[in-house]
Image 1: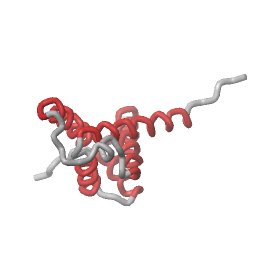
Image 2 (image 1 turned 180 degrees about the vertical axis):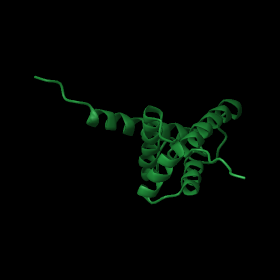
Image 3 (image 1 turned 30 degrees about the vertical axis):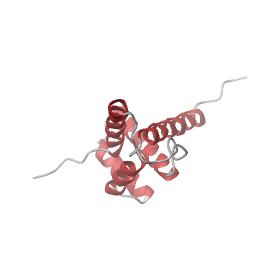
Image 4 (image 1 turned 180 degrees about the horizontal axis):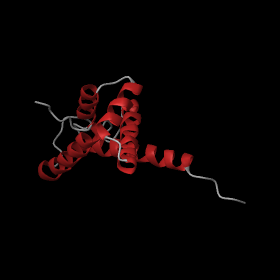
Length: 122
């Protein structure tokens, strides 16, 4: 019997959604300080998640299997999916940190898009 692995990026989206529900229902009763909330302490995780997102986009455009693109991306980066899932879980325990991680990944993807965009003709 073959089990299906969940994409780490989908795991992030699920955690962010759950975190936002927790924030709405509990009023953010966490024991972390406000100075720690809303920061991304694992900057390499941002790069990993951005690369996985780009792999998802490539799979959608080309029809290549997303799972194999994820495996290739993670192998190139020297991490495995379990490690990424653990790092995502640790980075998103506080809802503000989950939002900060999402913003950081979005910023990284936007910077990548700007770098890849063709320059306008003079």
